[in-house]
Figure: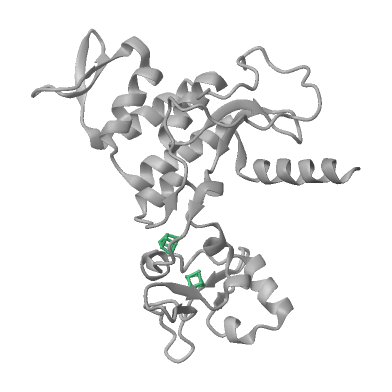
Length: 280
Ligand code: SF4
Ligand code: SF4
C-alpha cells in the first residue's frame, strides 16, 4: 500500500466511524427510546405523522384544531401530543415501513443524515445513521459532568480496564454490586467515605483560566463519558453547551453513507432504495 493509499484508508476509516448501522428492529427500538426518553415532541410528531400514516392522518397547523388528527373508523380524531408518540411507535412496530421510508423517518427523528443500506458483516438490510460527532466541539463547561445521571452506566469493561491499569484511585469510587445469576452492576462515583453517590464527579477540575473544566482521568474515563453527547439530538435534548460546526438540515446535501465492500446479493425485494442517503 502506498503512502497515499494509507492516508486515504485512514480518512475513510474516520468517516466510517461516525456512521452506525442499525437493523430495522434496532432502528424501531431507538425510535421508541427517543420518544420515551424525551417525551412529547409536537413539531417532530407533526412532521413524521404524515410519513408514517399517509392519508390516515390530517395535520392542522393553526387555530384551535391545530394538531395531528388520525382516522379512527370513519372519523378523524385529534390525538394529544402525550399519546401521539406511543401511537406512532405502535404503528411502526405493527406495520413496519420499507427501509427507505424508515431512513427518512430516522433522519427527522434523530436530526441527522440517515440512509438505507446493508450491514458490512452480514449483508442485512437496515439503516446507517450519522452521529455528526466529527463536527462537535466541546466547550468544556462541565455541565454534563455535573448534571447528567450516569451513575448506573459504568460497564464491566470500564471496571476491568481500570483493574488492568491498577487504578485503585478510580476503583475506590466504584461500587460493585454482585447479583446472583445476573451480570454484576457497577455504580460510579460512590464516595468511599460515606457510600453515597458524589454530587459532583470527583474527577472534574476547574482549568486555570477559570472558565473551563477538565477531566483529570480524561484518557481513561468511562465509556459513557467518552461517548457523550453521542448524537446532535442527544446534545440538544440534554442541554449540552457544545457546538456543531456544521449545520444539519433535511435539505442539505449530506455526506455519502458507507457502502458495503462486497456486492450485495440475495436480499429481499422488500428493501428497495439501494444505499442512497435519504437526505441527498
Ligand atoms: S469522569 Fe471525567 S468526563 Fe466523566 S463525569 Fe467525571 S469529569 Fe466528567
Ligand atoms: S455539556 Fe457539552 S460542552 Fe459542556 S462539557 Fe459536557 S460535552 Fe462539553
